[in-house]
Image 1 (cartoon, rainbow, N blue to C red):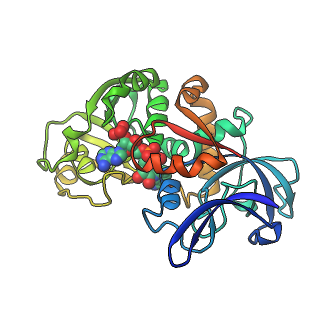
Image 2: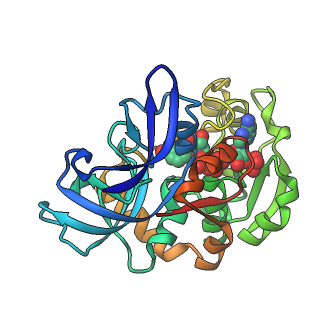
Length: 324
Ligand code: NDP
């Protein structure tokens, strides 16, 4: 038997922590004991049923997990190995990790870097690993600390917080766009050199604006992303990974054809294993553990549902880890 946050949809949607039989675990070649999970934006959408994230019912929530392998028939994994899991449709089409046990595919799992405990790995989670993918995307397009300022939108959120910590550690001057100016102490401690009110970016703007950013990590989409593109300097790069404001992109071709701006899409869910490994190795090198600790709010499995609602209501800063 194992406890899990089960999402059910019959006539109506229902989420609750339930005790389930092991025999209900899905197909997979690795069975794991989950020590910690987390609440990402997508978990919030799924647990509150705000968006059609879950595509099979009933579903155990939780796109991320970290812990120990219990049983494996996969050649790369044996009982006792420490793992970290992100994405791959887990918590959407395959039972997830907001549960004491999960059955996953060995091909999905990353060996937990020795630099991290399972709790730290889940403080990073999909949000932090996506932030790393965004930073790598900027680097690969030649954005260097001396290139100029980097804008991070959705700054107080999970992706934004980790992006600020990583970029400032790497020597970039980071400007944080936030709706929570009251969190200025938190954002500055992570490494933001300057804060701007997100309202300055969130309304429709001109297609061409004063050049400012050498690079952008955008977690927000919609007008914010359009304005960020319109303010990006000649040859700059914008890494887009999120839609916290909206999934639309009301922009023009001007930044691309007159300023040579590149818009790079960043997906974490289906990223190949080698790319994941690379991102986790970089996180082990470039993420200051003290800054990571400052982002963490820890809750129990029983508190996860209420916290997911708070996340969707914009009342959470940084990263929520769920102690299983
Ligand atoms: P969080 O909920 O932790 O943070 C989102 C932040 O966005 C909020 O804290 C807030 O920051 C800002 N925000 C919220 N609503 C609005 C709004 N209406 N307009 C402008 N800004 C807003 O989420 P995550 O950081 O975990 O995820 C951020 C985004 O990235 C999500 O859309 C998520 O789906 C996406 N994502 C995509 C991934 C991928 O693989 N492409 C992987 C992980 C996440 P503030 O108050 O500071 O402005």
